[in-house]
Amino acid sequence: MIRRAIALLTLAASLSGCSYFGSYFQVDELNKAQAKGAPFTQALTQQYKDRANYSQNVTYNYGEAYRNADKGLTAADGTPVAPYLLTDFNIPANQQPEIVKARIDLDKALNAGARDRAPKEAALAQAKFDCWVEDAEKTWVPELYKTCRKEFFDAYGQMMGMQGEPVDLSGVDLNASTTVNAEANRFMIFFGAGGSKLSPTVAPTLDQIAQIILQRQPPSIRINGFSDRTGSKKSRRKISQRRAIAVAEALIARGVPQKVIHTHGLGDAEPLVKTKSRNVPANRRAEIWLDQSAE
Image (cartoon, rainbow, N blue to C red):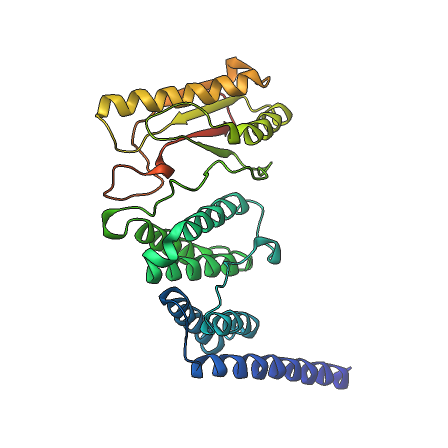
């Protein structure tokens, strides 16, 4: 029995050593690399280098060190590197809706020009998102993810608010059809400037949300409308209310009972993107909340 235990310990040490040396050489190669390409990929290289070295030498997470070093080496060659896909990680179900939403928002901003307009801030936002995903998987330390989560949202806000202006999302369809998370309790619908008319592209999303509501039958549904900071305070309140009503009517038309829906116009309160700019597409929205108890 003792011999078997010693053999197992020896094997574990051997495997750990292999993991260490595998990531050691990868991290070492990244440390020696000279980043090429655009300012974004150079800044991203440094972010992954910092994370790889931290994982290798501070937390001794060699798998994480290898993964970050690999992404850093790709970025160092000037090749764009995408944020992590959540399907590659075992993220707890209660954290998935927020992380999925953050991944979608980050992708939209990056593809709308954030890499060129704010390369350092965009690289930091992507690196902190990846950190958030990695730490969220570590369920044995459930509070660990909160640091990178906060740092991601701080970096995202800086990226979107560079020079007092948000990244231009006017050419990006914020309502592009995507699969709606059936376990989420919050859904968002976006609007054009100064209007409360629903875009035709949002119809598939509303179809999915209506089906989720009909299946889950929440006792109360809050629909909060929001505006950006254009126009007077009174007009912002009115347009936000009309947006909430527009979404409510669309859900009712899809079979959702009117009696469980409660609409509120909140003007420019609770912006998704905090910036000095008044014209912010991501803040022109309605949020659908599936409450767990009736109002």
